[in-house]
Image 1 (tube, each protein chain N blue to C red):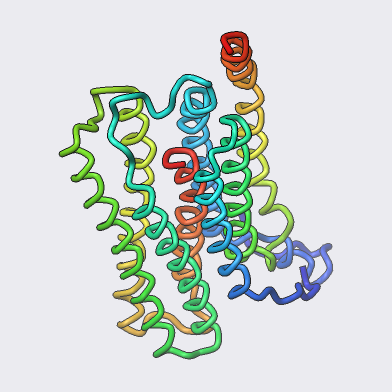
Image 2 (spheres, each protein chain N blue to C red):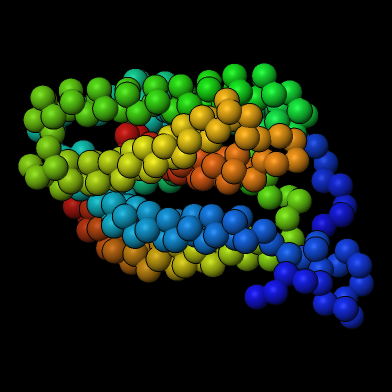
Length: 198
Length: 99
């Protein structure tokens, strides 16, 4: 695929319609991820929306309050990432780095709280194999947690490059791609939280 | 697109997300009938996800084609949901007969 503008197309028209290949790639990846989670969620919803008692009797109660606060932490990380990108576009390098660090800390906090709650649930007897409730819980929440780990790895990579001065108001594609993926992870969580915990 | 998109107050959107998250938890504690409860909570969650995707994932400056990439999985997702409605209805009818 050539990137040279076609001669018969008016100036500016071709560039406006062209999608950045990196953005296209990350969006296709997110589209595939949406389909992946669609399969998991739809299977879960059949059980969740049936009038059969849910969660089944004898299962540990999920930590609703802690996870609700954790949800706010993840949502706040999305907000700080938005501010991060704005700071970069405004050439506020110092603010950009600090906000990006804060976003990474919030993501890490979300993950640590999730991990801590998982350990507690395992001690209470909720395992992957002992019921379909446990299976769905660890599958849905676990797969999302893996995506947070992936997002966090990308975030830490971007963060290390940011502290090395790799990004500027004009050169910010890496931050933008990481941001898009992070928003996918953040946007997906309220749906999983509502389905699994509420 | 060259047209300037109206600026969005992202602090207000974050506040809305917090309020919606609290609403979702609040609905849970209202102990509504199960179907109403589930659909209400799910609707709130969808709105939250929509706010994050459409307001925070800043794609407004991109060409419209980029939206079509996201439309395809959304449509397939919707089809998938429609396909399991008979299962959910089947459960519900059985449950209502048992009352």
